[in-house]
Length: 449
Ligand code: FCB
Image (tube, rainbow, N blue to C red):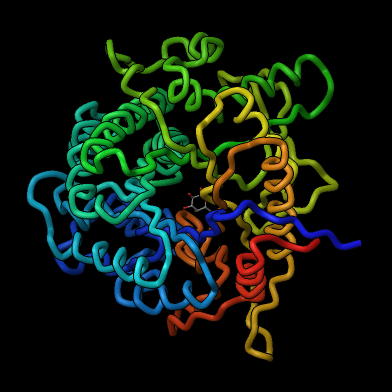
């Protein structure tokens, strides 16, 4: 018997994007270069040799993109502001044309009944600040807070939802530990210091946002979190899973909610631990109105004496299904994660700020994109989200990554995550079957399975 899963009234059904991945116009209207402009222009960094110079050309097509969202009945739109578009040098003079762009976008969203959900940092740091060390330099916490003040003063009267950072773990480790993302550093000690500065800048920004918005705003941070499973039932693998959980989840959650780094990992990292000044942890652990959770897949790990300081290796479960990213499809992990966050950290509100999947979509002879695997993926995750709500998790919203196919970082345009297909040679948008399915889910405020 099919069953209807009804979501709470007012549930925030959204889609997400980020500035560098969709905007293009990388050097227009006074925008300064970001570290992603520099990185993508460096040979060998992006799988298909592409850049975000044009991307989805959203900087010019924003009006039609909002219209598309409106047609799909989208209730909330998570986007990010490009720091170097607003402050070409990262600090100092404001580029009013850059700020105007977001001002118009916000007005257009509101006019169409779509709630703006703004991320302040989704990885496109001004290159001018990278030249001063970027996130490695402690001064950046202050630079970030000043930038946040500029944006908040302009948009704080209309934007209610504010996320400081997107996935600081990725910025720290993939950008500074392993070098696969901008700025391309390969230094684990640096990565931990960067993580600390990201958290510190978050804390300062929370205060700036509260002041600038008179307390009306809902302020949070977006973390990439996962449910970690041991590869076997041995005590060794369980201990490895605990360490991996510390590395991926607790290293960020503990400081934000409890004002301290996890002791086990702090000891495990030994001389690599970051420099922390008095007062930092109190600043980092300022009250949050919501926790944003990006969930794509679970982690399965085993003990491995050769596996770096954590002595952990990832294991790939054989019988599972995988997306084009090579990520295991494991919807139950979302449920486990939500329950665990609620139990251990008790965020006031949780928002799923990203969930979605890349598949090898094609435009069929009938001109449509029949992406049933994506519908299956989203449906199964929503059922798990619903289960968590029923068990008391204060989940108030869900954002699909992404509104449309876009520049998937080091993968360039080779991975399609959109509900809407983008033909990058013509910029034509084609809503996939999943977009139409999502429209029906939103209209019904729930889904039948
Ligand atoms: C997340 C990022 C987002 C997108 C998805 C697939 O890590 O926040 O920009 O690339 O992954």
